[in-house]
Amino acid sequence: MYTATRDDSRELEALIGQLADQASSRSATSPGEATAAAFVNGRLRRTGMGVATYELRASPRLGGVYLLFGALGLLAAALALAFPLLSLLLALNLLGWVALDSFGVPTPPIGRRRASQNIVGTRAVAGAAGLKPIPPRWRVVLMAPLDAPQVRLGLAALAGPTRGAALARLAAIALVAAGAAALLLRSPWWLVGLPGALGCLLVAVASIMPPTPAPADGGVAALATMVTAAQRIEQLERVELWAVAVGAAGTDPRGVTTLLPRYPFDRARTLFIALEDLAGGQVVYATREGASGPADELLLRLAAAADAADPLIDAEPRPLEVPGRLAAPLRRHGYRALTILARPAPGARPDLVASLDPRLVERAARMVVAIVRRLEAEA
Image 1 (cartoon, rainbow, N blue to C red):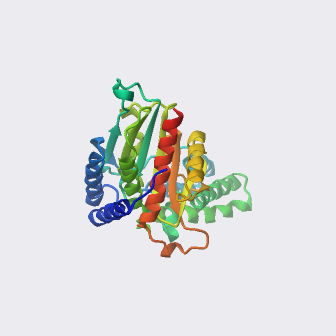
Image 2: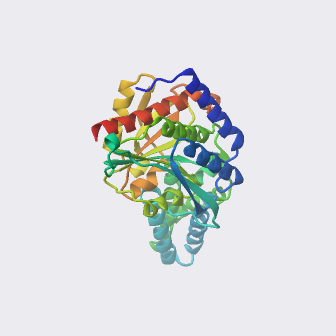
Image 3: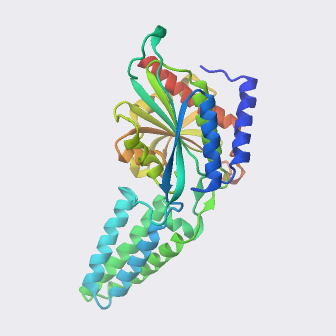
């Protein structure tokens, strides 16, 4: 079990402070995100990792695809009176699209792409007793987003990733389809298409409304946790360690998906630990993430064992309603992943939660280190 010293606590506070000062504004593809990338690059090198940087072309906006959805939904509603069959076919196609987007494979972002980057650090296994290293039994990849978390509030939430927004989009186009079907049958129920058309209009308006920065920037804490864990994990003999700071993670899954063909990530022996927004009083490891599915059983077992062995971690297993920005694309490609993040404790006011709490980073880093060390011991 790792015991934090006063010097460790000071170093952790300094790391968080430097990250917050140098890259406080980190929207996707922005200069602030590039500053954070350079900072993380330097800190990973200081831990003894080999570090590479590669450019990523990513979309800086999330939800723009719903402008197309809203416009086509309005077109389907407008066609209903003159061409009800054409309207019904278009609406049914949109219904299938939005269902797949919400509960299957999300539609890739559309629009102009800009330059972002991924920072990739690696530490190879060491040979036992000076012998030549053997191939690693496991490869553990720590991941954290470079860009700051953003949220969609009010009307803008209709173009967001929450389950409520997905159901609202499904309901809107389903009503348009029902209205067109009623017109084909010469039924007075065609009027149900009108609120559906209004819903499509609201989704289109929501899609052009910009998101707002999250009230508590837990992205800095997530990056600090990744760097701290990489620093504390010594060179291992059976586990190869990677640390990846992912660019534009909140707006474009390419930051994650472009890693997979570039690096030798064997699906059976590669374990991803995704560090999401660490803003809140309670460290959480996600047992399930919305429609993206459950976390990896081995990682869940190791996380539970690490938490039980170290009372200072004090983590809680919870299912998440919204899939994580990092783990969801990995699961869609068949990879094993676990998300660690923080949420407000029951009864706490989210607007009063401190996002840059070194104690929270300490707890999350202890969990990551314990998981990796347990994996090494069992290999």
